Length: 337
Ligand code: ASP
Ligand code: MG
Image (spheres, protein in one colour):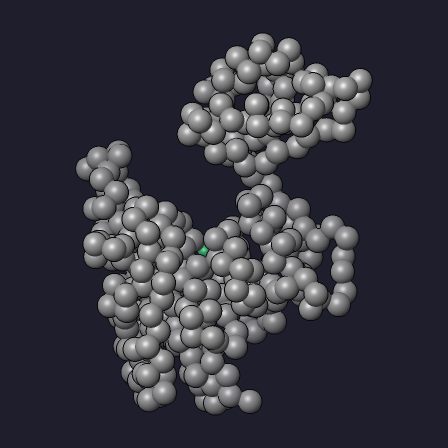
C-alpha cells in the first residue's frame, strides 16, 4: 500500500557527496515502491560544529540571533545538494528552508520550540509528485528571525513534519543500527531493540542516549507518531519507538545509558515530610540551574537522603546553595561526582 513517509537523515548520513548519493538511492527506492516521501536533513558531517567554532572565534558568547542565522546555513547546503542528487535521478526533488515553509517557533534562540508547521504548500507538491527536501533544526519566530532548535534538532523537525502531514511513518536514519540496550561503543554485548516505548525512549534520551533528540521523542509521544530509527549504511530494520500498548514482548529493563557531564549532589538526613523536595530544589532552580535526575531514598527514622544531578558546570554553585538549605533543614550535605 502506498504510504506517506518522512525520512530524516543525520549529519553522518549526508557527510559528503558519496553519502548524499547513497541516501538519494534510498529515497529513490522508497519512491519506486509507490510511496510519497518528504525528506528532512541535518547539516553535512561536522558542519554545525565548525560553524559553532567560527562563531566562537569572533565571540565566545556570540549574539544568539546571529548564532542561529549562522548555524542554519549548514542545512541549507545539504538540502540543495540533496535535491540536485534527486533531480539527477529523474525525481522532482525541491529544497526548502524552514523559513520558506514558515515553520514557526518561539523566540528562544539556539533552543527554540516548534509552535506551528504549515504543510499546505508541501502537501500540494507531494500530490504533484514532488519530493520536498527540508532543512531540519530550524524555524522562524514571530518577527521573522531565524531560530534553531538545539543540537540534534533535525529529529524534532522530522517528527513535527510527520505529525503535521499526518504521515504513516517517521523514519530517522542515523549511523547506528537503531536503539541499543546500552551504548554499543562502550559495551560490546549491547543488544539492538526491535521496539521501545516512548516512555523508555524518553528516559534513555534524557539519560544521554544521543540517538534521538529528547524533544523529538516528547513530540512523537504527545502526538503518538511512531518513529523508526534505522541506519542509512545498511538494510537493517532498526528500532520502532511507539506507544507502549502496541509492544507485545516486554523486557523488564530495556536499556541503560550514561552521561559523564553530570555532577551528583546528596543531602542526608533531611526530614521525610511532604514539601521537602521543593525546599531543596526551589533555591536551585531559582538560581537558574536545571536539575536533571532526582532520587529520593526510602526514609528511615523519619529522615531521608535526597540526591539529584546537575550539569557539571553548575556543581560549585549548586553545592553552595545546597549547603545553605542543609543548615536550614538540619540535614548533612554530601558531595558526589
Ligand atoms: N545540524 C544540527 C546539529 O548538528 C542539527 C542536527 O543534526 O539534528 O546539531
Ligand atoms: Mg542526531
